[in-house]
Length: 251
Image: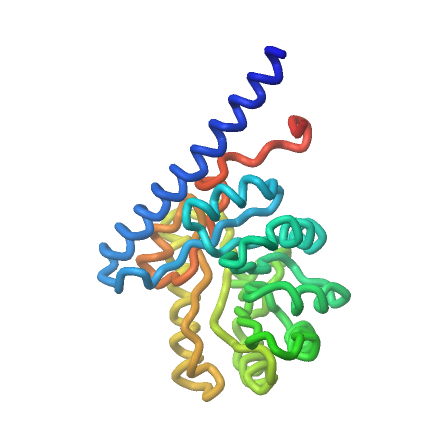
């Protein structure tokens, strides 16, 4: 019985700390928003919930968290099903997208941050069920031109914006980037700034980019810098849910 109590105690501790963490990250966001001279509420918190259990998300939701970002479709579908009684939750897909997964994404999510080619956007538009509002899309930009990263190049963006802007059941909202986290703070700031400048330039030159208002950038460690450079969504996992359990210690 002793071990069970220990596990249970550890579990309760994790749960109360999730609510505390949401409070402290929210305060970090508010402080950074104020410091940047931006409107209160102009930066939203996206809880990155991949590998987390439904009950952890439930606790986060009861602490006021609305938006949850998932990277793996099957895992996300299980959670969406498990939490379907919570109708305030807004589901965001933020992982790489295979063509054969677009139907479920179009059916189950409100936002997709990780669109990097026209084919995917076209499928999402075709497969968005009638009766649902348009699916909000961000274009994932490979901001540091790394070979390994998914994302479109800066040169591909204008054409993509024009073509996706014409699709009926999706709404182009903005840009997303996952800069290399090992950069210096100065380089990271330049990456965020480059994404913000790219959005500004698109809005100036492309009619389809007019309504775009979203920069999805910044994570647990660098959200202050991202907000100073114009982020409207910060994607935070570790600072909310704690370090992710390694494959070996998952029990």
